Amino acid sequence: MPLGMALFVAVLAIALLGYVMARCRVMARAGGDARVLHSLPNYYGMTAAMFAAVPALGVLLIWLLAQPAVVQNAVLPLIPADKIDSVGTQSLILSDVRRVADGLDIALSQGALTRADIAAMADDPSALRGTLGEVGVALGSEVEPFVLAAAQKSRALNGQGRFWMAAAVLLIALAGLALAVRAADPDFRARNIVERGIMVLLIVAASLAILTTVGIVLSMLFESINFFRLHDWKDFFLGPKWAPNFRGDSDLSILPLLWGTLYISIIALLVAVPIGLFSAIYLSEYAGPKLRGIAKPLLEILAGIPTIVYGLFALLTVGPALVRLFGRGEDGILGVEWMSGATSVLTAGLVMGIMLIPFVSSLSDDIINAVPQSLRDGSFGLGATHSETVRQVILPAALPGIVGAVLLAASRAIGETMIVVLGAGAIARVSVNPLEAMTTITTRIVSQLTGDTDFASPETLVAFALGLTLFVLTLGLNVLALYIVRKYREQYE
Image 1 (tube, rainbow, N blue to C red):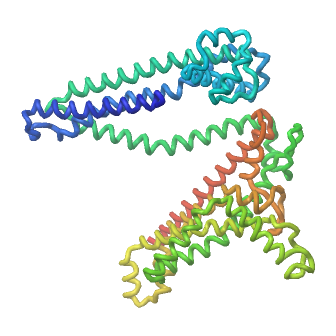
Image 2: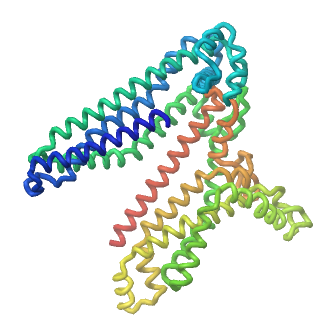
Image 3: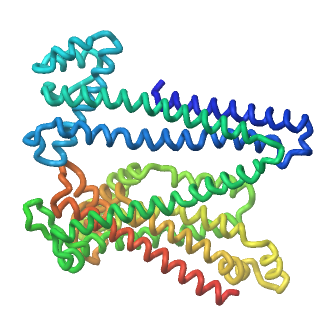
């Protein structure tokens, strides 16, 4: 069992012991009468468990996250400067150091090597590769002396770190247990401590989403700033062409990518929103229980299909069907040649719209069902028909939720990648013809970050500028939807 997992289990065992000890101690001090206690007996036990577990697990988590970085900084001076020509080379060398260090641990534990053998290999560690291969550790090249020296220092530092980590975590857990058990007195306000701790836990959980978003935005922002230091912002936002070539004279304009993203998303929404909304109205207002019980799960199956399957469906089925309809001259059904290949905006938009139907349908159905029955009864009581009730009462009341469903579908469409790669092609252009191949921002982000990149050229850093622009676009959609919902809600109320 890894040391981190063993310490986690040990801390939980100490916390459980503290729970039992604190509960028994406070009951003994109260003479077995729980009525004289400030809090219920379980609160005293939970206080002891919290004091024992929370600080110790916090230290364990921080230690596990910090130790690799500390060890890496300690072994970096052992790597000759002439061996590091880029960040990528440094990462490869450090990966070799970690693999050799792990391999030495395995070889020592299995008896394949002794410490004397490792010391003897200090000047010529070439034979080490075969020995490590015998214990299941694969190395890409021969082990150089500086790699072996760095691996030995890494092993030593990791060993010391594990020892002190175990000592610190166990001591903190035992100290928390002793403190909480000693404080277990009938007058101790254990319930207040537990409730305050739970409140802190809820605040931390609620803050994670915000902190994660802030971290993502800051990471993209800093890299985008580095990009705009190397590339003119006017060409990025106002240029007419997207043509990266990694030779320093690239045209990196977002306009063709933004046009393809919005064009495909609009076609997808034109397919998904009417079908999804009408199916939700039918299932919630007109369909019987048996039909609803069968149709809704079948409709929601579409949401569980992997996007790569949708992409293959677009490439192998929808695209060729559109070619037979709009292309190949006299062989086409319409006798025209508007479409030369299976990849096009229309192909990706249609398939993406099919994928988005469950997002609109399921959420809209739940929102419509949440409309109070009293509104329906009042409308029927005033003499309105069923269709009038749906149009003039139910849909206005459910509009905020429906707008949210459409917004979710729009965000999903803007961020889709695989369907676009296989269905729309990879050509960055500005055109109103839906039968031509285009590409989107997400596919270009993947393309720019794929392969051997050093994150120092504009052609690589542009991916972060694209991602930040995509984030701002999605944020703008959210703000617009919120404005529309609030404005309509004021008119409805």
